[in-house]
Image (cartoon, rainbow, N blue to C red; front, side, top):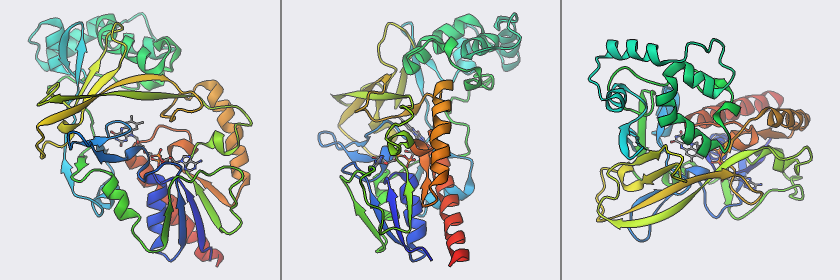
Length: 374
Ligand SMILES: Cc1cc2nc3c(=O)[nH]c(=O)nc-3n(C[C@H](O)[C@H](O)[C@H](O)COP(=O)(O)OP(=O)(O)OC[C@H]3O[C@@H](n4cnc5c(N)ncnc54)[C@H](O)[C@@H]3O)c2cc1C
């Protein structure tokens, strides 16, 4: 039986695999180049305001997977939380995702659901039969006014390119609701952990078989001789020293502000106009409505292309990236001692519940295969 395991990355991918394997008697060394566990889900109390801050951007746990929901609750108390995002467009505040309230606000109407449905049919661009890109898909569904107000500039700021350069598949379904439901997510299980996300990782990693080493970077010079297997959750292109080139990512950065009381009255407000250089503002005390704080801290979020020293956030997955990815995946498949897991090593955008689900599957398959081969 393989006993000694190296895990690279202390995000949900690495931590869940470590938790599963440690309980089966494997000895785990888990390394992370950062000074903390938790990966991009890391939370900490802000020194000035005592507000629980999501350091790499707001994280709301939401899933339709009951097994993952039950699993995560073994490690935290999840408080039900509904994310209700607002949009600022042309100096007015609207409800998001676009719903009956937004349509009535935008067109100054009092439509019923059926009336709104009929109206939207009349404003969609009927000349577009087979949408070739994101822009055409949006225009076909909702017409140019709603598209310009809520999608065009926001998408351009977020992705750094014209929406007509993005694939139509990003907008698979009609992006509006014909009722007053303003819950940002559609999944049945939604919440925020009472004590933040980092406390979950403390619990996942508390087994005596897990040895965590922070500030430790894995690269080609890192010796893995003593390990029977390696789980790697860093960027796949970095693993192969970028020999086929870099995969492209968007990254985000934040400007922090502190104020008395309540800064914007809501957790997240998107800024959808071109004239505003940032994409959104998040005020983190609203993610913990069960706490009370005199002061508040908020973060203005900007999006930009990822430079070599930036944290990679959103995989762009352009056709040229997918070509390069295939080359790395072919190399990865040859390395039987390594398993590539999580959002960076598989170069996909994944929510926390996807990552946890896949990590559970990977760990169970590994345990099964090493039992068989023992
Ligand atoms: C802005 C933003 C908001 C999000 N909001 C939500 C949300 O609301 N709900 C939701 O479900 N999901 C959300 N997500 C997605 C969520 O962050 C991911 O699903 C999750 O973090 C992925 O976990 P992971 O372990 O695969 O990767 P990560 O969390 O990125 O962990 C990878 C770890 O590997 C380490 N590492 C990388 N390379 C090396 C190396 N060479 N050596 C050592 N260590 C290394 C990194 O330091 C990092 O700690 C959001 C993501 C972003 C970017």
